[in-house]
Amino acid sequence: MNDVWLARRLEKVTYRQQDHRDPFQRDRARIMHSASFRRLQSKTQVMGSGQSDFYRTRLTHSLEAAQIGSGITAQLRYKFPKLCAALFPNSDSLIETICLAHDIGHPPFGHGGEVALNYMMRNHGGFEGNGQTLRIVARLETFSEHFGMNLTRRTLLGLMKYPQLIDTLSKETKSSSASNFRQLKADEWHPPKGLYTDDQDIIDWILEPLSKTDRALFQSLSSQSMSGQTMNDQSSSDENVTMQDKDKHQKTRFKSLDCSIMELADDIAYGIHDLEDAIVTKVVSRNDFDREVIHKLQKIDDVWLQEYSATLTDKLFSDHHHLQKDAIGGLVNYLITAIKLTDLNEQDDLSFVEPILRYNATLSTATAQVLKIFKDFVYNYVIKLTSLQRLEYRGQQIVMELFEALSSDPNRLLPSNSAKRWQQAIDNNENSHRIIADYIAGMTDDYATRLYQSLFNAHGASDYQLS
Image (cartoon, rainbow, N blue to C red; front, side, top):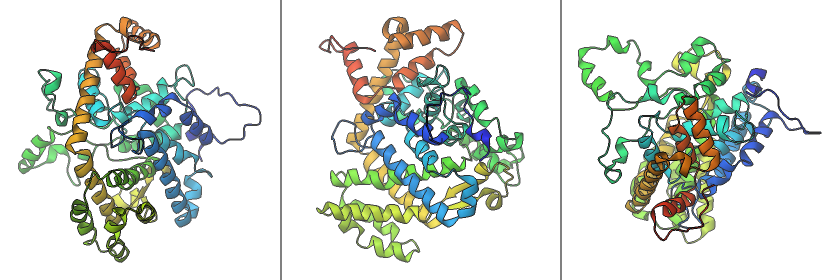
């Protein structure tokens, strides 16, 4: 592996006596021992955090994603031994690290908290969970004074799911501000998936080894992939499409190899493992599952899948938990074993020079369709459930109220470390609102709720600690 991808932004690293770990094992240790990682135990995954000790949290989801990521890497090494020997380190630590850290930036209360922070930051650079992840590991965590966990460049590249600035990706037509917080429509304030302008120095350092052409291609947008024409060359018949595009955020096109593995692991954990919570707790019904999943799976041209899905409902909805576990394990194995390495240059007539950009882990068309069926079911029949949306809405209100209160008098209401950072941002003419977003984004669901009660509830705990 090229040493440039093993570099750390702070070159001076403490090496302890007889420490034989490779660079990615050190990265993994820094993730696992960080406060941000521990806080994932009290952040909502799909079902509400704190509602039950059975539900998966962001922490258990991340652990499952890491295990799946290791399984994917093992499959790729088996299928493409020579290519993988050139592309990957000898251990699984790199992919495990990226999977463990991928949700570290997500705020309390799931997407409700993300929407709330994006709204409060609408005039100050926006907020997005993946962008916050990069900010935490590369700037905010306390393993170094200025560079966060000081992870290797390759680990940071793997965590960069959407390698473009939010400001570049934001839709042209801006949503109107709500008359009050309770009137805010979440669908109008979902952020574009990208990075912060405040972290441009981090982005530049990560992408520094790339050639100008590789970097431009890597950071290109989906709208720039139109074959045979540019946006200016479109015929008048496309004007309506262009106008509609102004009402939507733009999307990035590419991810690094490591990030593509992490994203597949994340999707499998979400679509298959998170489904288990909903089935065991009887949130979803057999009839809905049969109609929206099984009937669709039966139409896919895959003999094994058609045979497996014939008994899948009985196993998943059985009172015998070992049958549920066996069914879940079979689905996960089916998806993992279908993953392959794809040469993007050959597939899409591209010109990436850097190998870890040129190759991605991918599913076949059929297996990608299978995974989408499960993800869509979880989204439509679990996440969009009225009871869960009400919890998300409540969290959304809590986050907006906290942001408004803390920004009214930061030196008075922020804990000392955050207040000091806020004052430094003011003195340096930097984005001080980002400091408040950092503080709230780092809260667990429980912490945010207790702080809200201490500020706004007359009977809130009087001895509540802000730091």
